[in-house]
Length: 443
Ligand SMILES: Cc1cc2nc3c(=O)[nH]c(=O)nc-3n(C[C@H](O)[C@H](O)[C@H](O)COP(=O)(O)OP(=O)(O)OC[C@H]3O[C@@H](n4cnc5c(N)ncnc54)[C@H](O)[C@@H]3O)c2cc1C
Image (cartoon, rainbow, N blue to C red; front, top):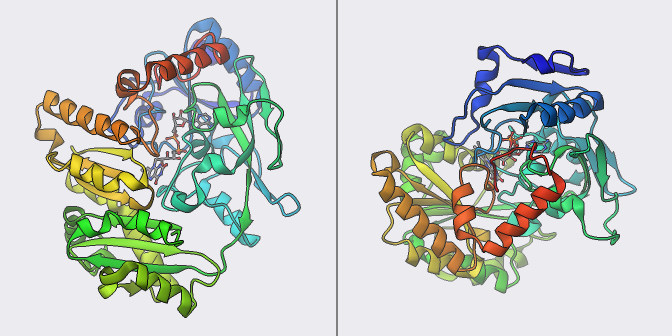
């Protein structure tokens, strides 16, 4: 693209074989070829990109590692992909402030490792933590198994640097937990999926690394007995740092097609529970827990060592990959309902042809329509609308983790409270009046 020829401080890709891999993310969506892929190396490139986007009328689609599941970084017509992977910056830890600062280009696994190296813990753990970029995790407000105890990415963000529509990089927020100087614009950018600006980096809170971790496998013969357990456990004072589950159908697929560790997984259905409270290795903790679990604890197993624990988590991380391999045309959604409504959710979807696994501990469930490819599209649409309406009725929403992007845009616009949709539209217009940042996504 001629307009980009003199862009300073950037690598530019424009050959079809170079830009083609950028047409999709990890959702089912594939966009048109982008006009170009730009990898900025400095603020000069960013400033000029904003100027050109406005002058030439193209969109700027920020991209991290492209692991998103909502089509958020998929190009639309006349898009330039802004791949943040080469933007410079280093990961820095401050013990004095209990913070970590990292560029958007860092990989999340390196951010988490840098904290651990210093005896510190940065909790956000999307199951893609070993593949996604820090910037992508901020832009999607990524969550993961430990969100049921530690919250999502936004709970950890103190300040954030972003390229805004004036072509400059602004810092929103400061590196302390206390900051009350007006509405928190850093938090507005977290989870904004690239529609307000492009994130260059952030400072997040870190905490001391948990000293003990207790990993438990809870196989059950009737999976419905698991449905009240998240609420029962927390009401009894046991807050797991992870509470994952596989329903019988998903467990069967994993046993048949998953890795070695999956073949040995017990039960008709299975929960994976983790606690990291101080003292969770003490007898007293376990005795209390067994009492709460009651009859369900009959076949409880404890992960004996770090290797077994890692094996179990690898199975969990691979669940969506194995399902996708076996059912390439499946459609999956990551709805969420409050913990107290998990049973009502399953009663409500009893007639829908779906299977489920995911974060039972916080009500964020990955529901999969395996036969979506063979269903008439109206029938699938109908099922999805029923599903979303049920979640909204139960006090939940359309997505717990993956975001709206392109995949859920129609549902967002039609099913959410019209006042909120209009408020997001006005915010978009206020912050990005020329509509250059990720046009056609979310709103
Ligand atoms: C196997 C697998 C498991 C997953 N598990 C989880 C999970 O447990 N929890 C979860 O939350 N997600 C999960 N995801 C989804 C995805 O990995 C996360 O949303 C991740 O945080 C996206 O990061 P990314 O760098 O790949 O972003 P991308 O896919 O590159 O981009 C995602 C969105 O963020 C925007 N964006 C990216 N970088 C920037 C930036 N610097 N500035 C502004 N906007 C930007 C893009 O425009 C797009 O809208 C999973 C995905 C896979 C493939």
